[in-house]
Length: 84
Image (cartoon, rainbow, N blue to C red):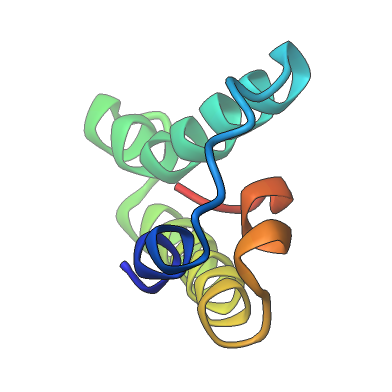
């Protein structure tokens, strides 16, 4: 939300759609978040391993979000790959 306000205040217009590789990376990044849940539900992973994998993915996403929201400016955030 902070970045939307910054863009409106600065008057910068959107540069367009991100590249194909960036979109593919973000798709995989978001799919990996669901992968431990799906594999545990199907019985491929046992509950302990599924929980550990999901917790690890959540911690990595938390660190990436904290970094993006507290360290990067609006232009850097637009180019940051690890965002949902």
